[in-house]
Image (cartoon, rainbow, N blue to C red; front, side):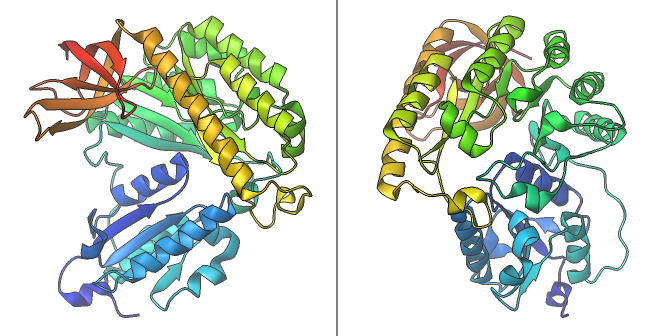
Length: 428
């Protein structure tokens, strides 16, 4: 194999990450552990492009292959290392996309491929770095054994496996030392975390003990929100008052066809428990529109349930059949136009709910984590942008706050961009 180091300098590596937050956490971890390469944002400058794929739906497969072809077409004719769930399911078809493609299902080996391409045979272990981010995704669990009828991920990632608790603590301590303000604990099925008896509440306690200012959980299944988790979350000041709890459908009959292990009444009970224990906690969710066999009545049930739950944010996905899943061969597949129409209605519902959530918070003080700073050309004002503990995206005018700062703001109205316009009260 001709190494990219033959070109006369250390290789430049770009990342293309598709799919879930776990993929983003994994890409970040790989990038932070590359001592022999320079990570760049512009793919046109890259000697190596790492494409971290998703395969949750047929559409995700299409996007992944398109991303690989686009990477191969870059002007420096880069080597393209493809990893992620699509490669775990179908490495051969990915490898066939080009003679500069390396299909690597084991993400732990991506770093070794970069080193080999750089002509390096030995390299030091490098501590996890924040890469200048104030908010970092950290994978603490992998795998799922739920086997929902629409999902291929259990076949791609295997059974639940926990990152050892001491490794999580070491990583968070390194991030705190690097100036990270918020860590987002991610996993494919994070509620199934089990490291020799240590469960997710133990992770929260151990991470909080590092002194990190804010802790967030990326997504958790309703059945895994138990009394102990809520009790630990309630007495942990660093825990952000926001949970993302996937619903997928507000119809019991659709949930049964999906293989989801709860009813709408059970889901509502978990949401009620969260709000009782965590007070004004915001709850966001995922919903799939147009699942096979979904009737007009079942869709209407979903819209009604979503509105009743008063979610702060709604992530809507049109059902896209994934070959190899039971749902892909179910009868009564919903037509694409109907799927699109139902998704549109749910998105409109989500926009209304987001407006209600923002209006409920108007006039209140909130803690904003500054993530981005920009000076607008139109009015010359320097604006900061970031998220509150309730996962509201906020924009405010501030002349000195920098990424990583915590700023107290008074929340205003919702802008067309979906962010809340705010006034700064104080900063630290």
